[in-house]
Length: 168
Image (cartoon, rainbow, N blue to C red; front, top):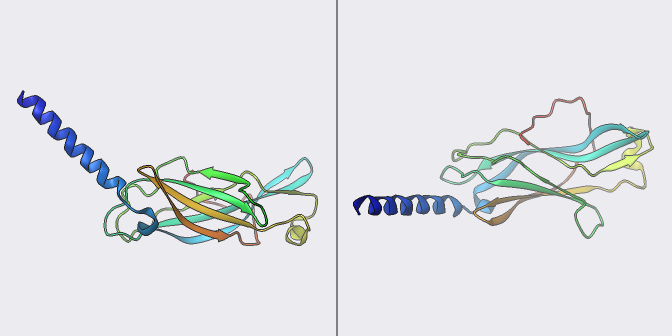
């Protein structure tokens, strides 16, 4: 009987601890910092240049306690569209145990959808088919989703062979 009570007490403590981690308000506890964005050069596909929106971001813990790991996603919106064109889910737990005030390693948020144009890369941003993209970044922990940031992708080409840190 004592063993059963001990097990129930341990389970209650574990459940309470798990609940504490899920109570973090990501919208207040997390800041997206050091954003670098552009259009990643996927190369030539079927004779056309393919460029996709990309951002490299860092997560900063703006709270007074270590962050629990959380899921991050990015949605990609073309200017003038009613809905998103693409979505990317970071496949690992972001910022797990990130200390207060600390900043994460770089996280690459790269879409699959983009532009495939027959013009030289240098003329991409003047082409009538080009539209600016906005990236909206969200975090999810404990079943709750919070918007972490939103930014317009810079009109610059990120070369395919450029070193880009990746955590996805």
